Image (tube, rainbow, N blue to C red):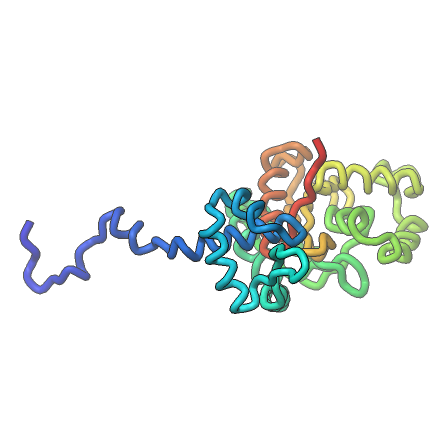
Length: 282
């Protein structure tokens, strides 16, 4: 087909094959990082043969990569065993990535997607000097105004999904003072009595068992909320994303699709921070 006058090849739409080609990376770099990741996953220095087998590459091929990695400090070879481990520059890269990671920046896209898909309010919470604190909020298309939950609002431990999340995951020393204050004043969810130590342990166990917290008709009447934790590379909870809306406006069962999506969003942010899910024994 003849080109229109005044058009160039740059103006013509690109074919799918050409687009895919433009996105093609450098295969040798991808292979190299596969080798580095096997060393990382092992948690110990590895002999050359074992490393090659794990990567499904030939021994000479892996050796060529390791020689280059040693030159730039990504890998070191132990003088006594000849095994290969991560080097000082790998450590510097990891520390630099940690310094540059910002949970607020990383969480915003996931929160926007969650608010758009559910139509409900989504907020990001951290542990502040007074307890669980909202630091960012996204409104969904079906959100009701929640004036009680502004950016900067401090939420209770026992009667908010965000608070219960921190209660379950933080060291007990961090939450002890606030917990004692609430147990002395807050009514249990049944409205008939105060919280007991047994009630608190049940809340903790439920959150840890389901990897998500839920709170109905407690923080606000006729509202329900679910909260999923965000961890750092050391496995410590640093924040949480919480979904909130009127009871019945979304499925808040702990095994619902909503719970799964919320957990996946929080998990992706945690992985961006360097967190690795603990392996479960068969």
